[in-house]
Image (cartoon, rainbow, N blue to C red; front, side):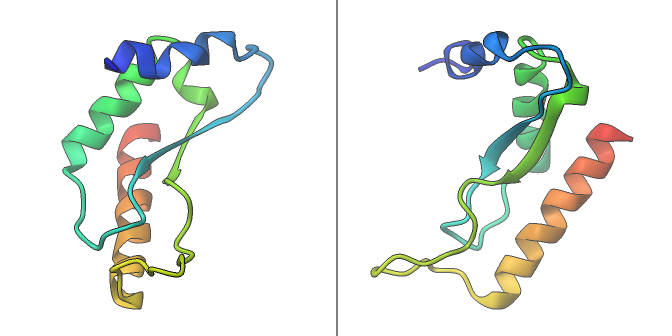
Length: 92
């Protein structure tokens, strides 16, 4: 699936202040994503919806399955800081 196909459903979001949360940061591993790649994904989404209606978050929180995620608590905090840092750069 191309990026355009991935974000195309966003064109159906009303322009009435509705917010869309992009879960493009994985919560399954402790490795931090490439910041520029995440910013590029956000930019791709703006082809379909204004930046002001977008938010950024981890894909599905940090809850564990019976198999468990491979993140330590410290890595979770680093991920959250990473998300805040990216958001500040994109939305300021």
